[in-house]
Image (cartoon, rainbow, N blue to C red; front, side):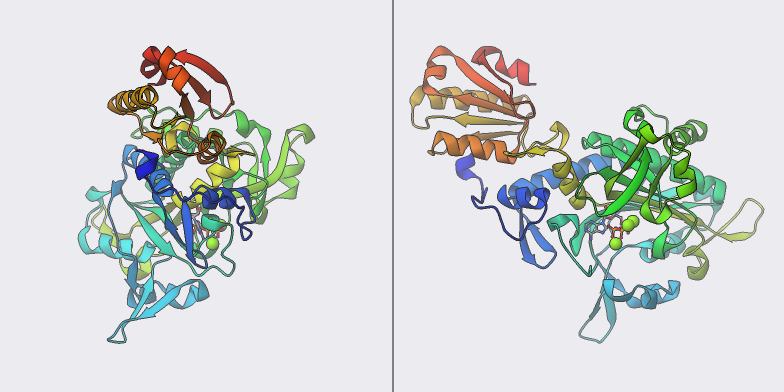
Length: 439
Ligand code: ATP
Ligand code: MG
Ligand code: MG
Ligand code: MG
């Protein structure tokens, strides 16, 4: 992508309404634009990051055996009356009436709808286990939307739903998602800690929130330092091996970790003083097992091996990709701007042409741009005629992992300056070996 042909509306001023750094940087870097309270458009740079995050989420869901579907954003109120949640959900639900005065709603979550899909087709335990997920916009009329996409009213969610014959099988489904979540957050460059959590309005008795430690987090969290050194399962983890998955989950749930609502002073007291981490946290994911809470009232039953009909055991598993992006920025930035982890960076490399219009400089930049692109990298070429200071500030602000700076003198000498955004290291290197070095 050439910057001259791109749409990157950088803000020079620090937006006053933004209270936390991720919100400020997302606005300044031209990633998002607020359209109404808690409702955002994603501009080209933001959309690229969102797509990269969703791709990681999708790859890990697929690896664990979940199947992608796509359910609508608009749901019928009648479906929610079947579970009893239409009245319980309260003001967070956006209720809509169509021209025929039929009651609809903009989905805040999809348990009812996916249960309806399941009961319409699945009859036998032989078709289990099943896990269906989608990545779709949700709406919750939050009392206090704030912090940009961190707590917005319209937000993206990956929500998966598992169906199993009994509790033991459901526990295995839960473990599969647990491990998939560990891998997902690590691949996004984050250290997420699974914490025992309250089950809230969804109900049930087994639930973990995945929390990123950050001073701007909305909840107080308490955990053992050991979490910081635990090893995340590699990509060849066998999702068909229940024993192995259970071992991983045990490792990741044994040290103390709880959010404020579940905090247990007595258990916390047994953690040695020097090992305690009392901090603030951001909830980026949440997994629940809730048994037959929806399947029983909604009649989602299967015939078991003994010929008897039983309601299926279900769980639901959410990740907020839009919030996740804000969390990544909270965890990875400096004074000058965002520092993207490689895996989710909008572009892998930024080339800065210091003197557009200079024939040699243009030729060197264009050649590198083509070659890096051909090698499979996403490249942003700053070919605009602006001040050096502004060019550098923009590159630092948008946080691409590697910057390659090419000026007329360098182009003549066959050299470029390479800057690593995360460390600030700069090095002059020959243009000839650059592609090999960056790929
Ligand atoms: P919170 O406690 O922050 O209100 P929640 O517990 O209501 O979140 P869940 O119902 O568990 O959220 O939804 C799953 C995931 O969806 C959350 O872990 C989070 O990543 C994301 N999410 C929930 N609400 C929002 C929101 N208002 N804005 C952005 N992402 C959200
Ligand atoms: Mg909430
Ligand atoms: Mg919560
Ligand atoms: Mg939650």
